[in-house]
Image 1 (cartoon, rainbow, N blue to C red):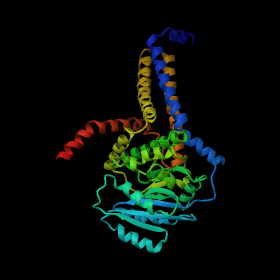
Image 2: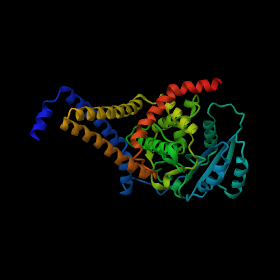
Image 3: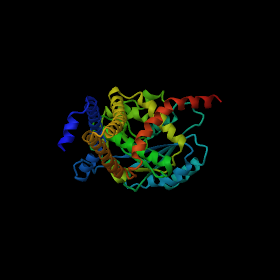
Image 4: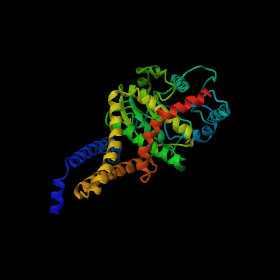
Length: 393
């Protein structure tokens, strides 16, 4: 042992520099996983210990849904939203120029459910982002002060969804960020999409709980009419075709308290199957929005991503070189740092997956966390050129 220690102390300076750099990247990664990405886990512990304040004086809620050719989902999912165990709420569906049987389905449901209201946006109406206009139309006609946004393909697990959201309104001016997950996640693309949603959710909920709110999901989000009016709705983002909820959330977060709702009954399940086209569009939208984020948010996201790749690169390099040179103590240090980061990540991701009710994908996680940023790099370079050629043809 003494001989090994002596050999380590006499190692080349490059070994100590390499281990020092590896340790630096390890600390950065550990910080993100134990601070930001573990925030939802800490929050859930407070919820279970009754350390979070909720109210039994439930406010009136208006659920807003924009639907375009979503007759199948409205017919199969909307009844779950219309039968919530909630004292006062309405559901407003704005028909965004649908060509399917959406109108017939909504008319039939209106006869059965008095709390269902409908409106429409003509198909020939010229707007860059039709969804923003649909939401604005619904909010203008809403009877209640709390607006809940969701999508036509999002299904509550039970009749307690709205109650879980409404209990967060202790002052009446909160922004409540919920979560959603996909139901059909079979195959390689399904698993990749599922992990992507899991990582994205623990990222935006973690940042929000650490007072750095930067995004939410239009599938499960609530805010007051006052907060909406204070920021003038989506008026600052009319130039965007989609993805405006991120920037809207940032605006609203400045005006009111942000709360995260991830109790099991509050998680919505998306029934729509993921396709390569939808997956690509989601990432392109995310990349475009990210350019408009505040500098501190963009810096934090970039720092985590860069330190992730650099950690992997340095860890592999150090383990290979020290192993070849039979510098066993240096190899052990590098291996311990690498395994410590992987174990920490596995624990944090597993607990977040349990909160969301999805798979943790522990076996595929090392591949997925490397592939997803490379996929966005592809979309912003070679992939963009290919699409331009396709559009020209």
